[in-house]
Length: 182
Length: 182
DNA sequence: CTTGATATATTACAAAACGATATATATCTG
DNA sequence: CAGATATATATCGTTTTGTAATATATCAAG
Image (tube, each protein chain N blue to C red):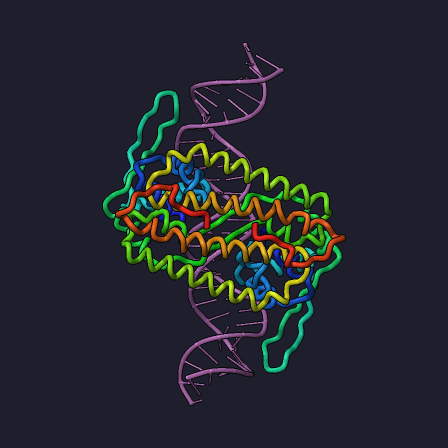
């Protein structure tokens, strides 16, 4: 989804500043299906404001820079609902990690092993973090995506753990039948 | 991975034209971890040629436009191996589909059901296509990523099929415990 | 007590990627 | 024989990405 629609979606959960939107988008389950930086969010908000899809009010804060709090206008809410009726584009993944595994042949064994172990650790950290914010996710759609994400991480962790040796050990035959589903 | 490294990787499997690189990148298992268009590939190849990392030779073809066939130079091969030693950046996903599921509350039930059924069909088509090109994937790393991709699609298909009703049926309670792992 | 890390908050900008379109030809399908 | 698909490359405006700059506040460690 483009940055503008993501901002509309985040604001449909309640008014927020650009910084707060970024934080929301970085947490599960939002984080499972997109990745957006400040460089996309602020220009998107400016344009949405120019188009009248969001309104903003500056709030002076004690001992902090002012914050611009954005909220959806009726037109913004309409635009969001229109966007939800468009047929979804195909998913896209960018994974340096899978690229490295694909290129295993040209990589030093030790480095490859380290990369895989590191990834398993990262997944464990992610799963632990998800357990912490689990209670905040109650709405049906949010929960669905949250659990899908969690199941995916568990699947990936299992696949890596069970098939690591198949990839790393050059002495055994590369028989695909020995790869387990994870 | 940036487009230049992807081109180097594709060329490490043998010389090819820009068009052929694009085709390779669109097939499993390459397609599982990246997505690159002509608009990225041709500029990348031009720059790689300027930097001496690839060489090109124009081949006149009968009844077809000329094709520029690129191949790795020794410096290009070196650059690729250096890139493989860099720590991989975090994965990034862009999924309009999961965004729609997340936004389920604001969507007409029928449309949501159609979107999910369509996705399951798409996965079936993808799995069928993978079965067709399975025999071409023999190298260890390629096979690993290929099977990981296939397992993922099967997992996702199962999750959607088994939990679709949980998401769609507003009359049952949204008890997360009723979601099955897929 | 002060240095450094983290958090709040926004903006600017170059580099890269994306999406669409243009161009030309050949082959395959209905 | 028309229309879709495949081969082959290039361009170009719009978006996105990554990084840094700019301020201020808090909190922990040395």
